[in-house]
Amino acid sequence: MRDTRSSVAPGIGFDLSTSYGTAVIRHHNGSFTNVAKVELVSEYKEMMQRLSLEFSKHSSPPYESIKECLSDEPRQILRAARKRLGFPASSDVGLLSELIHHLRTRTEASLGQSIDSVVVSFSRNIALYEEDINDALEYAGLKPLTGSSFYQQPHELAVAFAGSGLGICENYNVAEKCKEEEGRFPREQVLAISYTKDAFEVALSTIDNAYQPYEPKNSHFIDWNLGEGSLADHSRVDAYWAVVRRKILELSYRDYVKKPITHVVLLGESALGESFQRVLLAALHEFQDELPTIHRADPLYLAAKGAAEFAKRAQEQAA
Image 1 (cartoon, one colour):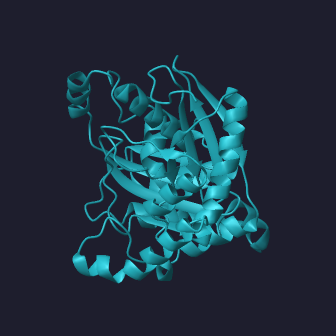
Image 2 (image 1 turned 120 degrees about the vertical axis):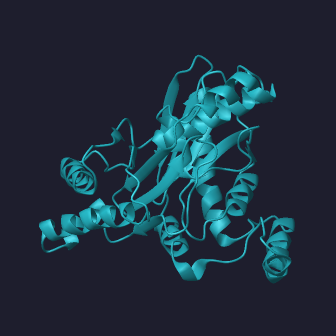
């Protein structure tokens, strides 16, 4: 088996979006290969929709109190028992693992060799927890990669920011130089928008270092009735786009000091559509006088690209 921690090994990034998964390889020469977009049966999307609802929330490690830990003990016992019997920790983990397995198969076919560790980014769904991602990776026979700068599997926004070449140092193999460079990064107000056939998702974060974004509560929403595929269900197209525009503005104005947005990161298979782009620009013009930098490059694979960059850096730093 190859040594995935070798400094010359490619970095592998998977992104588990609300509708599908994507895989990207970051090669040692700095180039990237978009490997695959994989969609599962409708159960995956139904799971993601359920996990975006408030009632799906539950306690999950890391706990904030002993009381929280004790309240979660019965669920943890059940998860451990399922794993001992050779089952995924939960039915949700089983679906996540199935998608990861398909992404792994496609990636290994592209590389012509096996892989054993990856960085996986995922949506900021209310009830999608890192333990689910880690258990899904374990069931798929993979290890979650972490590094000196990140200790858990990241959300899509952080890696998408990194995938755009922002919030990450150039001298990442020289710790002191990297830290010095990151110390000079400006603090950016970043609006990430994912627009797919199934959902419309917006997140607002403050980022200077892509590894440590500040993601305040109530700075994220997802609407499963505003995906591009639901356009046909709306009797008036102009009314549909008016709602999309209002949703962008609602989250932008939610910051109590109305900080100007400096970057917009686009994700999803439908993000480059002409009508969506027109509505996005109109909303941004209404919110502030000066347009932010809009990152439109490869929105389908951008998050997985950033995850692959995280993976490559973690491997080189550990080698």
